Image (cartoon, rainbow, N blue to C red):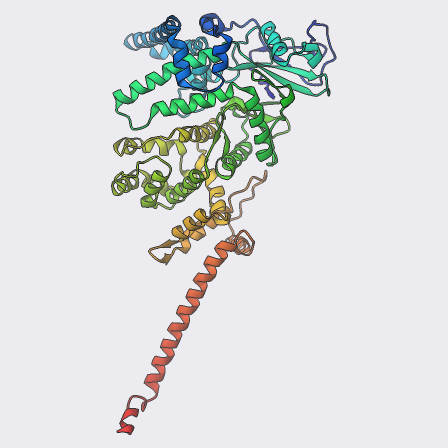
Amino acid sequence: MLLNSSPSFNSFLFNSNSNFLSKNHKSQKSVPQTLRVVNSNDVDAFTEKSGYLFKLSSSEADSLNDYDLKKIAAIYKRKPFILLRRLFQIGSTFGRWLAARYVDSITEKSDLMFKIRAAELRQILLELGPAYIKIAQAVSSRPDLIPPSYLDELSLLQDRIAPFSTEVALNTIEQELGLPIDMIFSEISPEPTAAASLGQVYQARLRSNGQVVAVKVQRPGVQAAISLDILILHFIAGVVKKAGKLNSDLQAVVDEWASSLFREMDYIKEAKNGLKFRKLYGAIEDVIVPNMYVENTTRRVLVMEWVEGKKLSEVKDLYLVEVGVYCSFNQLLEYGFYHADPHPGNLLRTYDGKLAYIDFGMMGEFKQEFRDGFIEACLHLVNRDFEALAKDFVTLGLLPPTSDKEGVTKALTGVLQNAVAKGVSNISFGDLLGNLGTTMYKFKFQIPSYFSLVIRSLAVLEGIAIGFDPNYKVLGSTYPWIARKVLTDSSAQLRSSLQALLYEEGVFRIDRLESLLSESLRARTERVLVEDNDSKVAVKQILSFTLTEKGAFVREILLQEIAKGVDAFGRATLDSLTSMANTSIPFAASSSSFND
């Protein structure tokens, strides 16, 4: 686990001789790292205000290991007073805050009270607990959408939440692992080094091998609180859908999010996710994925490798953002196994300048058919083939098969024509979604549950980059990798898509091939990127690509077109020679008269 050691972290430093304490609190030998510890004097607002939710019997808790709305409803049907109390708590806290905002507006004090109301909203979210904090974390990753004061406050929810009792945490570790603390760890920090919505982290040293590790311990009561809040949010989503006559199945979106949240609460699954993520993407240059210690992990305790770093959003490193874009491309479009919760607290820059991914509880699966459909949609968008784009939306499940495709095509042309005309490098992912709003409502677009996590993953990455480069466009950075994949992939569907793109009404569009090849040459992650606008160099690179094994399919297309050109030239030459012969031999036309 990587430790965020930002100077603004609400914490204090242990000196080099007291980094670690054993359970009996005798000073132990320290590790050669500076340890920053969360202030234990902070009030755990969640436990204080929502502690009444924690009481579930062991059988009830065990039945909620996986997301099952019917089981959740059955449990709280037997606990109507807790349900009513929670509804009152949510309604009254948000109601008071909204009322205060309204008073500010009518008394013309909105600007004056802006920062205060932002801080109050953060406190409300802390009191309500993990489900609401998770929603705020997603929102806090979009500086282009959220006012600065609210962004500053909500950003604190990413990894700066008051911890729960260390005594409770140590007891949890012993109960879960079935051994005394000092038999598992030779050293452990006396206070958590970081605290988040679902758990908090301690630095420790494994007794078995001396490895320095992070020990994540789950907060008490999160399973019960999240279960009840999801039940409430699921009901609200149904009401909003009906009242607003929305096309998207909001309840299915809540279900998808809830399923991922329940998986995130199972640390065994998280450890397995981390190992899989490490296997698939750990070899990418300048990407770090911590190792997991599965043998020391349970549903509520996770032990993983310790590495230190700072949040990516706090360091202006566009190179690492590009590395993140490339890694996200691999996650979404190569393997389909992706990090579905990439908020700034989970993307860190290590001190040796590498990008580290942490927290593998919320992962997503992107099926092959949807991956290919997404690639095709990007191709058709960039090449302004809006008729094909409308069909792509059907493939992706965004449009029903019975929709008016001709009407959708016209609407997409009107909405997206100007955005795409600026060039692929200037296409904003956020702007595209905003521009599509009216069209989506008019033609009954629906957001499939799987797609919401994909959109969030891309939007968060763009949001981090926009924080220090307002002109950054994640789609513009991703498209070169898409172009390269289309040109080199052996998938029958993508090869068919490439042919369809290059031939319009039987006419070979060499300009589109040139565009794809040019874009694919931008797919680089080297630290020193030298721009070379020499057209001769570009031509040489394109020719070199067609001679490689990966360029075989494109080479076949080019050879076919060259053959067609040679054949057409040959026929034209033969026709010309024949015509010349007919005009230069005077007796050829009258030769038949000699036979009379």
